[in-house]
Image (tube, rainbow, N blue to C red):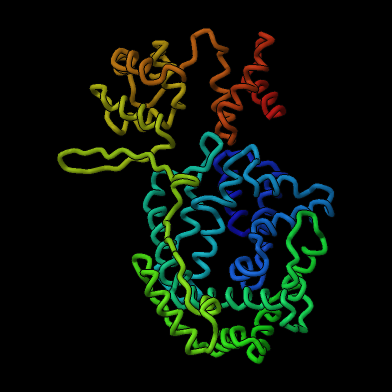
Amino acid sequence: MHLAQKTIDVFKKKGIEITREEEQGLLIAMLLHDIGHGPFSHALELSIINTSHEQISMMFIEQLNLEFDGKLTIAIEILKKKYKKPFLCQLVSGQIDLDRLDYLKRDSFYTGIPEGSIHQDRIISMMHVHNGKMVFEKKAIYSIESFLLARRFMYWQVYYHKINLLAEHLLVNILKRAKDIFALGRLDTENKRLEYFLNRKPFVKKDTDTVKAFSELDDMDIFGSVKSWRYSNDKVLSTLSQMLVNRELPTVEILDEMPYSKDMDSLKKMTAEKYFISLEEADYFVFIGKIENLTYDKNNECLKLHTYLHITDDSHTLYGFFDKAERQIFKLLISVSGVGTATARTMLSSMHPTKIKQAIINDDTRSITTVKGIGLKTAKRIVIDLRDKMLKQFPDDLQPEHSHPNKLEALSALEVLGFLPKQSEKVVDSILKGGENISVEELIKRALKRL
């Protein structure tokens, strides 16, 4: 939540509009997004709960929303990624979200793994909003690269450490065995909180009793039960529990490919003979799993870094851009004789890309000469060289000359405020249908009321 407040402050300084209600919604979403994590959370999810912590979190939050008369509605929309400003959703859950920035720094410190240390403040300071989505300034490229590598290192060295994975899988099997024999009436437990879930009580939406029972579970309920199960009459449950409590863990091996089935069968047979159990029960002791360490998920939300490598005889310079269209305009501008990278960057900093395209297609040299360092001669050369290319590359983006004179400026302002261009244009067009002469300020004001 601390990082969320810092990010809000950064966005406000950059002129991105975030209302008081949206600020509150974001902070609530950050505070409560992991409220559904129970004791030994992932092990519990995979054994006796059979419900993800994200689903449980939403059950808690929706109940709280009822208690607080709908004041958590924006937070819920953000968590469900349905809020009208996508960048707020991305801050809570995305490829580079605030949760990841927080836990990497924290876990790196407490585990003593220096490779996981990241520069949170620097990354946050370079966040921005474009087309309603979160983007980063071009100078953030190396910090983002450092973040991705840190995340990869932490997963291999901490979260996916083989002993950690083995202990968690062992706990999963203990809880599964406990649930199975409880259903057969062969397990007595004095822990009523855990017994509620061993009794095959599924999570049902709006089931306040189940949510309340889950909220009362803690680490001691789980580990205290495991300690008592060491003396169970069930050979499998008692042996597994002793292994975990006494840290007498089975051997674990990381392989590049799946083992042969005959090798697994041989291990199960040896285990069954060792503990005097059936081959079916040996599955609790001999098991395989699969892990993947993805730096980012390309099928979920791609990290898009729009860059251009400019090569000269004495230097290689990497430039970053908000989007593909801005990069295209940059490449077109530097193709004009007399326009270098510095001039092209100045032009993109001074004028919105849409305005640049409009100025070139409409032979508006006056607008182009307002850019520092560009005279009339250069402006005319830009128009002559690029007009046909602009028409060819951006046929759908260019506004006709008869469009309202204040429309582009209003759309640019709304984009800076974080609204999606298509959504903004639809609203602005509906306002301009009346044909009245509206100032830019009035046009923006009316649009904000409808967005």
